Length: 128
Image (tube, rainbow, N blue to C red):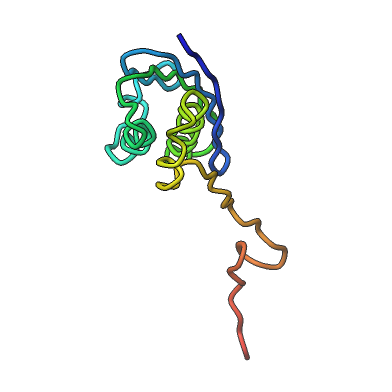
């Protein structure tokens, strides 16, 4: 019974997952993923790695997620699942890579600069 644990990150969200042989149950922080991610787009993001690799219903996933918002958390779980599937079956890597599921999205929130309202927005300018 192969078991692997990997982690995935997106923005400030960090997902640590344990992938084992099973029936396809996905739990996130002790809840079913459909309960934790109530909207369909988020549920699709979480299951995307298993569907693309053809592993849907073959593995049980137990995920611990912290930080960020729900979208970042869902994408962190997706990356972690993809990495775990490749660890168990390296032949699935090209199909996951082609869909962009093996790449960590490194975009982060730009920091606020001094003398400005936000990262790029300036205070209102009055010519006269």
